Length: 91
Image (cartoon, rainbow, N blue to C red; front, side, top):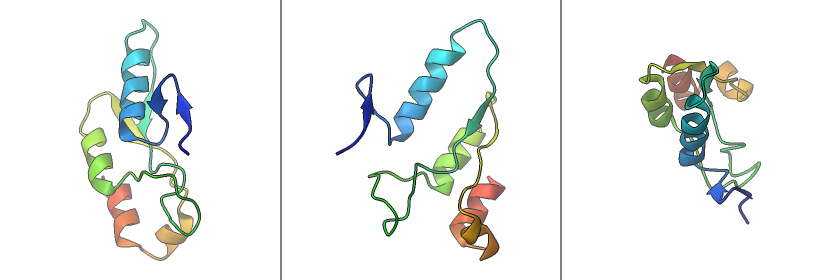
């Protein structure tokens, strides 16, 4: 079962963009970062049903209103120099 909020799937790329668009319509200034993952992309830890890859993050980082990559929680992948993790960091 997938967690839902306001009719949107919390585990998909679209939810992040929808939240971003709603908040950016306000007069306040918001600073947004691209998420480095959907809570666990690793099937041996959790099955969220979604995954943000380095291509998704690259698309987000092309936007002028996205300023940084959110926290990288996959420290084992960083330490192991995992190809996909490093591509996310380089995006």
